[in-house]
Length: 242
Image (cartoon, rainbow, N blue to C red; front, side, top):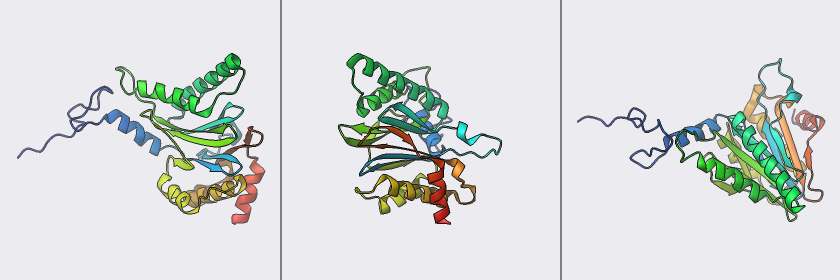
């Protein structure tokens, strides 16, 4: 009996608008695999705000670490980071920044986090059903403060989004997710979460780990300000671990 050909050989992955016989959009699935190969990004909702920690994945010693920014400011109270094709992320983040600025000018008030998330996901979804396009090969973590409460969302290449208490995307996501399930608690503070995430990244990266690879930003509920974590704070955590 002749075996059925794989979907790839039958051409079901050649166009984004073509479903395979079992109802899959293969190019979207390829985009999700791209995200899993990207550098690690973690978000945690804390008692006193929200925290984003990422691996800048700097391997070349000639690269200037300070010039690599993996976490971007969308508005004073909103931050975003990504895993996957970072050039795709830059386009989405710049769109979100413009959208937030337009809202502030039009309504004289800061935009809410969910509106930013929905706008990004609407564009992502269009790219899963329009011929001649490809899906955005990136997932975003978008964190901020709304009405005095920290919020954290994850978007994937399909255009779907979820709100999380803690989430990780990119490589080592399964190992880090296991740690989050075990050690995350609703009353964790930003300082405690930062120590947990830096130590966890040090464990999974092992010999490749260095303080230059870590980028971290928090937004506190009180002041609602995008605040990068100083490199000295990360080095103190690493030195105590050793």
